Structure formats: C-alpha cells, structure tokens
Image (tube, rainbow, N blue to C red; front, side, top):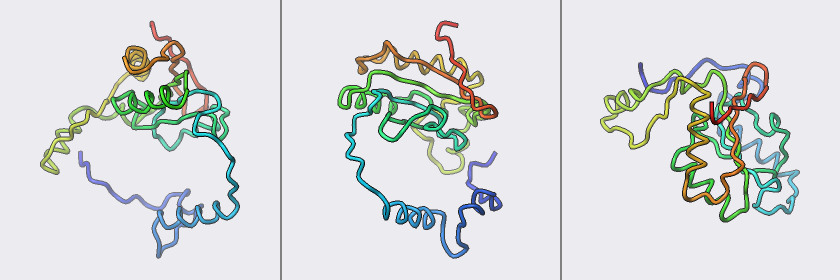
Length: 187
C-alpha cells in the first residue's frame, strides 16, 4: 500500500463547481468566499451553541451534518476527524465546549463504510518506512463501527475533564439511506 497522495481524475463535483484549469481548488473556494462575504450580514450570534450540544463526527465528505440533524448556524459545536473517534484532541475540544461555552450534550456520529474500517495500525509503520518517522498519533482503525461508537461514548463518559457526561449518545449514519441508527452503549 502506498500512502502517497495521488491526483484522481476530475470528479463530477469538480466539474460542477467549475475549478478553473489555471487555478486551484483553493482559489475557487476563496472566490466563493468573496461572493459569500459580499452578501454576508453579521448574525450577531454568541460563540455559545444555542442548543448546548457538541457533535463529534467523521470528516467523511458524504456527511452533511447540519442537514442530516436539522441544525442551523449557531445550534451546535461540530468536531470532526477521521472516523469521528474520541481522541485526546476531541476531549480537549469537548472540555472547552462544555466548560467555557456551555454545552451539556454530546452526540457521536460514525457512519457505514468508513475508511478507517479498511486500515490497520500498520498504516503508521508504512508511513515510517516512507518518510523515516513514525507518527506519534494512533490511526484508531476499527472493524466494528458499533463497537467503536461504544468505545467513543465510554471515552467521553469517563473523562475527568468533562463535567456533563449524562447526555452522551452515539449513532451510526447510513450513507446510503441518510438514517441514523442509535447504538446501545451496553450491548
């Protein structure tokens, strides 16, 4: 397995957004921001989420969390990473979210056909072989998405830094139907 990045053929999404041949995707995004900012009006919101909830989810591009959960701008804190795994950095963000910004509930969202189900911790060794240094972080690969949600719920519930651990719920988002399936933490 090669860990090197490759450039795929132009996707339909890239064709749709009109990436210029003389510019980069970042150039297109910066231009889109200029258009957005031209009509932007400060909503006058506080950094505290209206619903007092933090959502931890996978970074997978197929998950549109706001639409899937019926959320609006300002409703929640959204924390995303590969797999939606509760790592030390996620605990850091949740701690700030709860202690400094008033959230009380945590929702964990993993999903079907996650890329972390196809990796192993050997990925770190392959990186070490390729670049000459082993990453300090764990891949957090898993084979059973339900069990990984349970593990993430347990990590949140047992963190000494989080004062609000009574409303922690975990779900698996089905990328083909759009439905959430709640995971029983005790199963």
